[in-house]
Picture 1: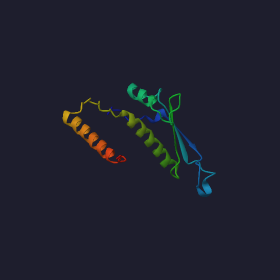
Picture 2 (picture 1 turned 120 degrees about the vertical axis):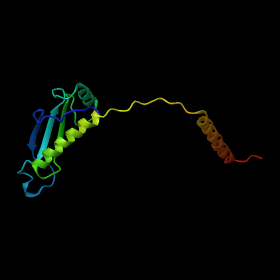
Picture 3 (picture 1 turned 90 degrees about the horizontal axis):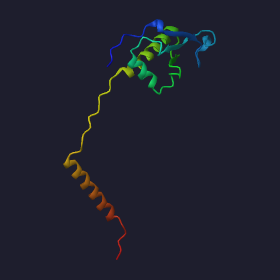
Length: 134
């Protein structure tokens, strides 16, 4: 895992917008949903993480390299702000994990023989299902 400090809040733009869906009397009056915008290229993230984020095929990342996250699951602005920041951190953490390099292996002689033996047995079973010609 690549060590990184948390994302500085001055690099994140947060906008309050009206939430969609049910919300009772306040749905058309209160801007409780949060739009988070984070410019990957202009951020202070390490170059490795920037490249990995830009290479992701994620619909939240635009062609310009801006992450847009909309959070409207809670009724308060503070909870939605925290949820949006949490999702941004999770997105960055997903690319900071170093994948273990795959070590190429070859099948053993015994496993090859077992495979061929099972193929032969299955073939014999199928041959037994054929129509009997007299």
